[in-house]
Length: 410
Ligand code: F6P
Image (cartoon, rainbow, N blue to C red; front, top):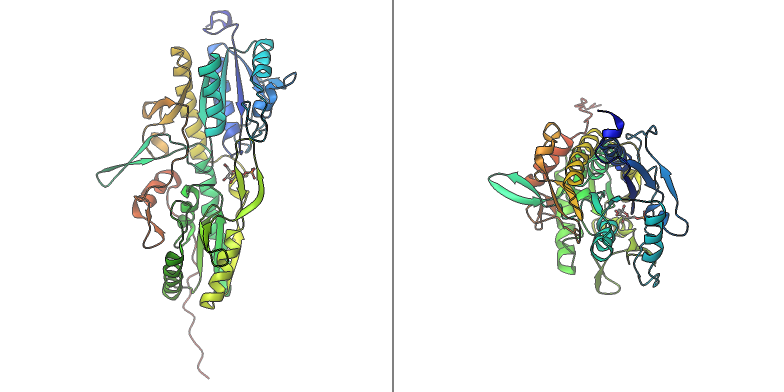
């Protein structure tokens, strides 16, 4: 087909990424850019999320540029800028944004983001008529993507967001590495995992040998704390190598003896433009309480930005390509205000367009981990969750140093 005969010739599609980065954003950008170019669009990248549409704008041309989709993070960079009035910034920046939309002659905007970025985009579509298509993204995996997980004759409402598969793989590998130091010192390591208000990512530690687990969805009251300590003691005694790695979500709600309240541990009192505070430090609190209560050597390890960093993993690479195929469908139908999602949880080889659908991109967060996936009485993830992870990560990964040294009797 000759270039001039292309469907969207003369039109411009712009892409932006907002919120916390993930290892799969560049892959999403590349996949959308490639398909939009084939359709005939000129493709722009807006730098630093919504911030790149303020002032005079900060826009780059991505058409025909080399692009490495395996490289993690986002080459378009990101910000947590909210174009709508917020507590932190009461002024509406929508007029500036509209001005730049006209100046750069943008016809369609694809927003790669979570609930905040896509929620703002949906609002622009509804109030200003800006043609937007959302693209899911978060390591927290807490957007309501309405993805069904078929397990044991039951349909469970699950979630699948690009970025989560790569981050989950890193959490699995990180946990598997921690095991050797935990084993060597017969320690309990309380490993803190990002995820804000959801425990999806924390659960991926079980594939690296993590035992038990605490997630934000189920708070640890005074009574539950006692039960938790008993469960830890028992799990430690029963562990083959006399050590444990306990994954805990950064947003775990933990009973504080001093205040008599159940709350999260905050890393800072500051909030972003969408009103989110930063969590961090609960692993230290839990580890020292375990030491004090049970007498075990317990240590805290914050996995922090590690799962968010590094290259895009294969599952994410194919997931982003598949969802980008659905973006083509939405563009051809001119269906805006929509976001492509997988309609069911599938293994790598079934990441195909026929398994996708699209949903309304407004108000898609926050989908907590359901009790199908977490056993509140055992403080552990269920077999259904292992099955969910098997689709995405394949098999659990942790080596074991097997030895049965003969004991020397003098
Ligand atoms: O939403 C993604 C996320 O990585 C959360 O898991 C975490 O709480 C937050 O972002 C950290 O944000 P920041 O990059 O501002 O430290």
